[in-house]
Image (cartoon, rainbow, N blue to C red; front, side):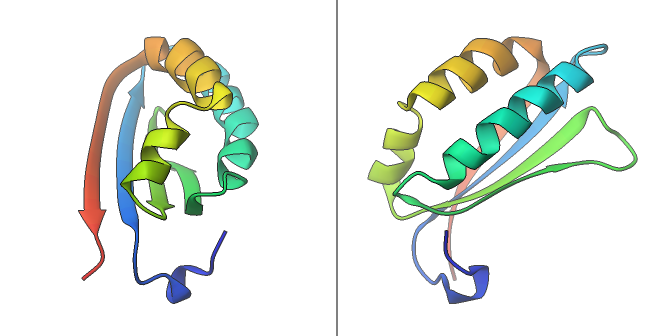
Length: 103
């Protein structure tokens, strides 16, 4: 992964999750398993997941991919399809994603 200050290109993806009541610990464990695998993907320039201090059921993702193809490839990885799509997403009350470009 690149230094965030050195990144001037790429596709930025943000995601906000709200986890269903009673599922926070399990989703947190899934994300801790997922994160290092996502960070090692060749098209990933930055990838961080944050959990709210005041509302622990809320998670914020900040992701920078080399390009749209790298983002598409990310969504096809085994760790994404198994851990995120298969195990975490069904435990969410809300999921929002947006895509951005650097200014």
